[in-house]
Amino acid sequence: MITRGALAFACAALVPFALSGQAPPPEPVVWHWFATCGSADSLTLDVTADGKAIYDSTFAICHLRRTEIKPEPQERLLTFTFDAAPRRFGPQYHATEPERIVGTVWEAGRKGDAIVLGVSFATAERVLLNTRHVARPDRAGRSEWIRGLVVTTRPVRHARASPN
Image 1 (tube, rainbow, N blue to C red):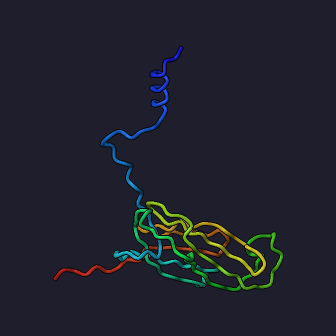
Image 2: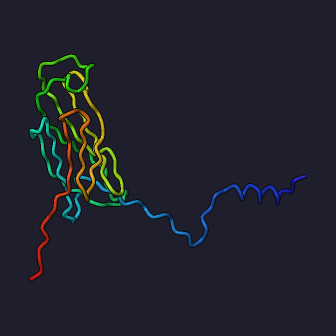
Image 3: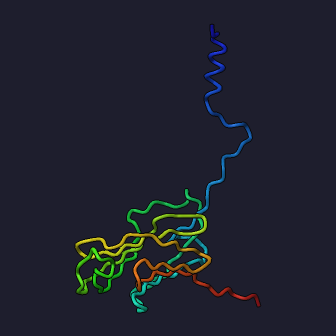
């Protein structure tokens, strides 16, 4: 027969508890774009088609704790257009005449060493490509999912004022 004391001890042993003096694990610090912080860090995004520039943008980035990143009422998007044949995106797209393609870039994820950008290309009727590009604050990155359609990111090197 199990005594009440033994049963209470067994139940208490199943309940997780924190040891006194044990600090919670540190909150991860991640990169975030369009951040309003005091650092001068930024990235440049370039999109080219067959070697021709079709879009470029430079935006601020910041290393923040996840809890410091405030939700925004509307997701920030970088949007651009260019003309291309949808067939370029794969044989399943039969149109060979150029159409207006809308490109969209957004922050899809945050890591301690990078920002994951979502990248989408679409016509008025269909999404042609929806993928990701890893943008690092310390080195250039390049993605070419469709031959000749290239997305690159690179850190902007700000000149530091020299002491006199």
